[in-house]
Length: 105
Image (cartoon, rainbow, N blue to C red; front, top):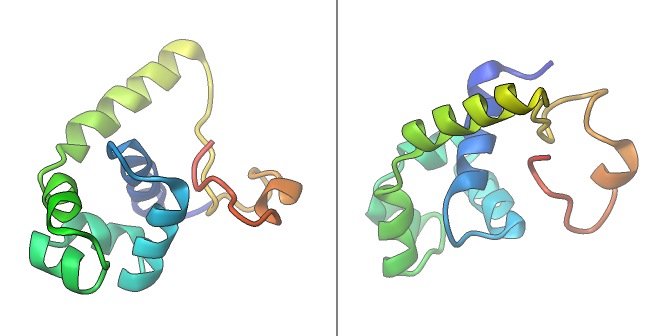
């Protein structure tokens, strides 16, 4: 299983409003880790992440901790497990091989 903090960062980024899965992966690639994307300020998100000023401000101001906690509670209440691309053996192999696999299921 993946590092719990890294999994949480993937899930948090997936919850960020207005970002497609390809953008989330691109940001993670640009910063080397999804955790670093969440730590980045507006300027770094523009410079390293290639985001517009508006998108960078939206992501930098995203209250991801609260959104993440709510998502975990929702999943618990439904009795489901959230899967990320980091979850070897749990993320569907065929889905991982498509052009634009979702980082979070």
